[in-house]
Image 1 (tube, rainbow over the protein chains, first blue to last red):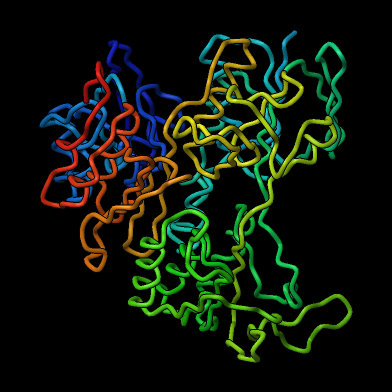
Image 2 (image 1 turned 90 degrees about the horizontal axis):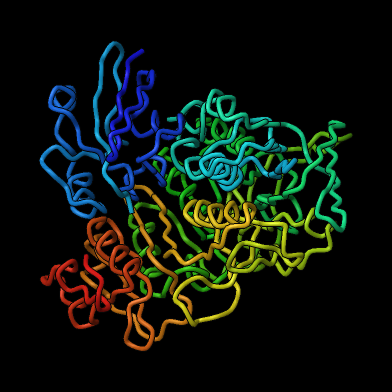
Length: 106
Length: 427
């Protein structure tokens, strides 16, 4: 088990117990966390699961792939240094994750 | 009591339930699905699932807790068989399992079934269709079986090509038989069809266009209710293509039985207006089963049925608003994706009524785009392996913008900067 804390653009905070192997996008969508759409189900096709990743959380992941990097150029809210597509962020056991969701995904 | 009955526990059905609760509706919601599974995503079935990479928990739409917390009564493995509505709109549905559900709002998200091929031999063991989870659950081990060396795919549309690509990736000898003169002809321009023909042939798939199939051949073990196994597919010219496994992907038939029972207009889909309302003005329909006014581009007219996640979600939002008596109109720009081997196709917009095509980049590089224009305005694009360009185009279309054909034809000009927006809109 691990926990993911989502902070929405309006400041609403939601914390979800996540399952190792699931992505931060899947954890949000299956539990009804607003602010992440994930229309393509995690196949890197839609760029509607954009998140800003907190610094300590960033250290838990490697660098985005070339494809993800390209998709991040086309997100609805412009990318920042801490931007990732949350379908590419897979949870490990025993970790705490913190992300902020943008105002729009479309 | 304003109980809502949603028939079809799929992408569209779950979305309607979700939006009703988000908007503060507290009345009972019954979400009934005939499949014995929790609501799940369909797109991965023809991709990761049949590759053997996914488990049931990987494809579900929502957790059990999500339904419970929102007090949405999810009924799976049971089918609504009759539905009646009185003059005042209240109604009763009964299910195969003997349930009786009373409602005053009704949503049909009944989806579609794989179109069956009226062909001799489709009942042989080893002949598969792929639409539902159970069909995928049956196809996956059959594809993984080392004894299944020769795979024939009947139908060169998205399901057929995605499955063919998976089978080829597993090392099978794969033949695709397409009745039309080109692949995916119902959806994309000739340029995109030609690319997929070349790309799949490069990967070792044998593609036969204008294929005329006589029958599916099988072993002689058909006795007393048992079936023999498939051995091949015979074409009308007598050619026999050996097959240990046949996948038939020749489109879908929308599920309209309940709409018929209710006397709603049905025309190859449940006819709805831009607010997702059926012909009685109060039942709503959304997703693969619904035939709606073409939402895009404005002015093309005609009715259209779209089979995509995006359409299911967008139409469901409109349908939920209509159930709540709120004004809503479907206006978003449709989009779609297909993953075949290492080829990512993303389609933005609808190309219906195009009069000009611009190819951007060199298809042989497997990274290019085909842009569709109507009266000089961009209306749609097929983008292969270039997500940034897809997103730039989708964003432009969503904002009512266009990209001049001359700029689109020159890959050295970045698309994002070439977008021309209507006045008062900004990227």
